[in-house]
Length: 306
Image (tube, rainbow, N blue to C red; front, top):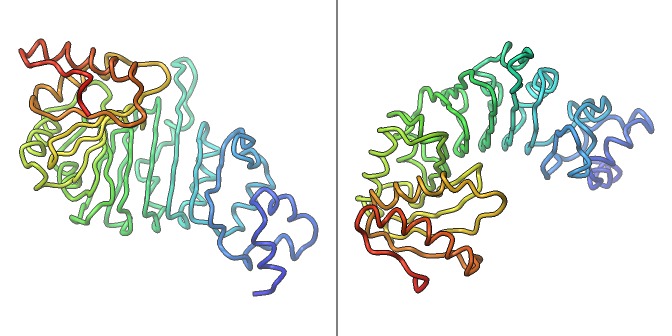
């Protein structure tokens, strides 16, 4: 590799895009080493010092460059169609897809939705996927995505041809648990759960079995989340639930339902607080938890817990 190409490979991706028109040799990115940092494909790229996703030069640069970590926000079919061209080379993908929440307008993404759109990402190892305001199904075929070992999802996904591979992390929505999802979760080193409305029977049965196993069943730890924000770490071997600080507007009903489920299934859990929890945050948690424990005639927790 030429010294010039090595030096050019040290430029930021924005500078690489800006310098491509200088001359023909500069427009060729194939000779450069792979870009090692995340690429952001956002409508407003200034938030992360990248060009906007509709910038033609940026798009041409993406098609010509070597990179494996990709973060994208999708709001229309044009953006999705372009991203599909990128997916075969991607190893770590964070993708957020937003449908049209206005019932009077046509949702162009939903109209042309392909449930297997992720199947083009044949090198994918890590997937974080968020889908909002799209009711169409999404499917993941493990026989195609042979390297996939990390999934964090906020949406209903149907999993096909699961081959009992070990997962680094598996996160899903407990409203939609089925036997395949349970099998995946039981092969994950770390689990992550959220809910849309309420955990279904399969999810609750999985959680009961996991608590009773006392560390003898994967996942080794479970994270309880709201919109990917972790608010509790559950450790069945230790018998503990560690609460994390929460920020922004509080969805009290969401947390109260979670703490009600914890108390019903795990009445003797050891309660801990993350070091970053303030006294006020601890008291907020205690008020929510103890109101649910009182309904079950369980003793309250106090601020003396760890």
